[in-house]
Image 1: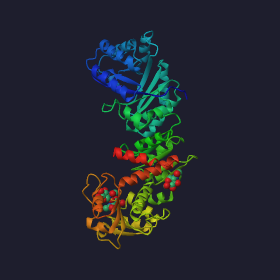
Image 2: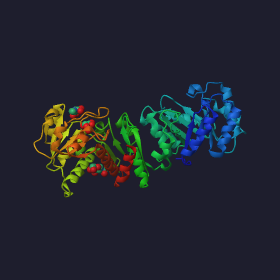
Image 3: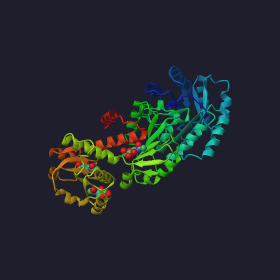
Amino acid sequence: MASFPLTLLCTPLMCTTVEEMLIEMKKAEEVGGDLVEIRLDCMKDFNPPRDLETLIMQLLTDFPRTQHSRRVREGGQYKGDENRRLDALRLAVELGAGYVDIELEVVAHDFINSIQGKKRDNFKLIVSYHNFHSTPSPEAIGDLVARIQATGADIAKISTMAQDITDCARIFQITVHSEIPIIGIATGERGLISRILSPKFGGYLTYGALEGGEPSAPGQPTAKDLLELYNFRLIRPHTKVYGNIGKPVGHSKSPLLFNAAFKSVGLNAVYLHFLVDDIEKFLKTYSAMDFASGCSCTMPHKEVALKCMDEIDPIAKEIGAINNIVRRPDGTLAGFNTDYIGAITAIEDGLRGLNGATPATVSPLAGKLLVVLGAGGAGKSLAYGAAQKGARVIVANRTFERAKELAEKVGGKALTLEEVQNFHPEEGMVLANATSVGMKPKIEETPLAKHALKHYSLVFDVIYTPKDTRLLKEARETGAAIVYGTEMLIRQGFVQYKNFTGLPAPEGLFRQLIEKHA
Ligand SMILES: *[C@@H]1O[C@H](CO)[C@@H](O)[C@H](O)[C@H]1NC(C)=O
Ligand SMILES: *[C@@H]1O[C@H](CO)[C@@H](O)[C@H](O)[C@H]1NC(C)=O
Ligand SMILES: *[C@H]1O[C@H](CO)[C@@H](O)[C@H](O)[C@H]1NC(C)=O
């Protein structure tokens, strides 16, 4: 691999006036970017001699500089005469722009000949290829880069559309193997990792939008997120890549927690959102040891993921779902379910708080009667986890058959939701609610009437939006101890972190961040 300087962070500016451009340039600099890309095609009433001079003179004091104008059929917004466009770019070169980005199709040769002798010392010509529909084959991309190189370009830019997250692998491959500096980007939501991981593969630059500004291409992160959320400046060729596999997955707070945690202990790793359509294809494509070194796994892949594992934790296998994948040193994949550990330890600690100090070796759940509402994924995790700790488990579900099936598997008993309302064989039971009743937006509903709650000493709710559900409020009013769904979320994260890194999770930091960003 050729070694280039660290990957630059470039903010595209799509303003319509020079005044706005100048304001945004300042903002881009404040955020911490290295250079700006001035999209001349977006400017209204653009007067090249006057406007370029203002923009470039301003930039000379701050940044390296880029001029960028695109032809309309290539997706840019310029609709004018081609000669006038090239004249403007040529003028930008003469005035001292740091870079000009011109499309491969735009007879780059002619343009290059016309600027001979006019370039300043540090000027770099970017010749770019854009594909707004797909990512070509590795061979086709290789040919494109060779053609770009043949024009005499200083930097090649390949921007394609990711239809699947595995398309990014082709971008990584060409970025690593290119003989000239390269900007490799797969656009679209599924291409996000190609933008963030540019430094890992030696990309020349990546794009980060201004916050609140319009991204210049789909899937573009903000410069602020690149720097603060993904620790962009710390990403190196050997950085290990972790992430959360899901669809959708963009809402997940895991990158926030994990990246902050990695940084806090100086671990050379980054945690991303993996928007995955086909998990098997994903895991096969990114099978290099330092890529997808460990993954969290969320909806809708928790069950299918089982099929891709070389080894599965026995309880996870019984639950039929994994949410934590670890790549072992020999390259094999092991699957775990940390959801149930998160929930069970949260309930155990809640009970310890009630009972006072009990020996740490004995689970306070042992011998307890635990009622699980719901027989879906979360219900299963709770039922198996509690049974393993020696609890007597009752499963209740609207569809009685589902409850029965699960109850039998954990050696427990099944009830209908109606039966639970009047179920109190003893006092001091534990209630764990894992039904979907009362989830946003139906926050006023509750799975169990308030009068029934007085027989429980502890009530746990799986959901965390809202944090304080009607069930938990009413449980508190009847005097029960309560455990929030956020506890399970945080604690399952602790276990994932430990499994990924072999280190103890920075629990205080996780809690602080969840609190701050809830
Ligand atoms: C009952 O089980 C089904 C299937 O697991 C689940 O979709 C449903 O939400 C459950 N209903 C209740 C009320 O728990
Ligand atoms: C992952 O977590 C589970 C649950 O705590 C544990 O049993 C397993 O050993 C861990 N795996 C690794 C690789 O650390
Ligand atoms: C449990 O019941 C509460 C009602 O307060 C509801 O908000 C929640 O969505 C239910 N389900 C889960 C998984 O917690």
